[in-house]
Image (tube, rainbow, N blue to C red):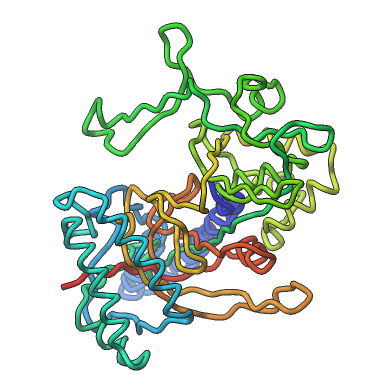
Length: 438
């Protein structure tokens, strides 16, 4: 789960609102053209019919874009004239660190395993070699402009099909929260973090039918029957897991626990000042339901003000509503203690500003990517004063329950106040590219 989960459905709702206005425009234009055409000569009427057809087809093309469901359909190779300028707004050290993490991941895999980049298929060995070439070029380049030319000369570029003819992608952010906790339950720490329960069963449906490849369900055995695993309400209100030895830490605040689950990883700050890194271990498999969308639907928050900070403030100001809001979402995250974190879905440490989460069913895990979107400018009071366009190389090292489809990217912002503000407010449009050595 990610912060994007809180706001994603609200953003999608706004997009459908825009599309609704397109429909309204088409309907209004149709009415005007038909009335006008009836009053004109035949030749003018024919022209009106032609114009109406163009308007209608344009509207349909905006509304009837089919979302990619296979990795072969998620990326398209672009021509040299369509390449972005490969200019990067961050330091080389962080880029090298992130790429090295993926190289280690590829070294751990069977070298002949297939990796799909849209219409093309490579081996793990080729992808790892491609990333090593990238680092060599990074060391060789004497200026950003020279590096731009070297990358364009040595790499194929694939673009996410995104959404619509402009291939737009929605960027959100996530970060690593620090929450207060203890290793044992006491008066101040009453909210448990659970490890993965022993009876949580994962079923990979592709093992039963090729048509279901990549799909899975989670459940538990009840007698000889597999049933859905417990909901958030059953776990936290009814205590169905309490006292079974699954607790790994106890937190002082259940709202903090909720947002830690949304982020998928974080740090528990213990009373003696030591830190306990925790990372995503599993989920209960229940469908995610957005608490952000709930607050919008009930009129408690508007689309414009929607952010993690605003949701948190609402819950603080309305303690009587906390159960209703939190239990609206039946999904639940379980954690594990790690030595160094946070770890992404390829089990390597995430790099601040360089690691992204995408739909792992569609895009190459560990792959080198390039993004163009906007980041906030934040003043000393912690207020966002504007948004600035940027581009940078990133590495696809994570995924999330709400990160679905070719038009979604979640950017890891690290830890701290700036990271929390940036991740909590980011919902910007942009473009996503992947690179592979020629």
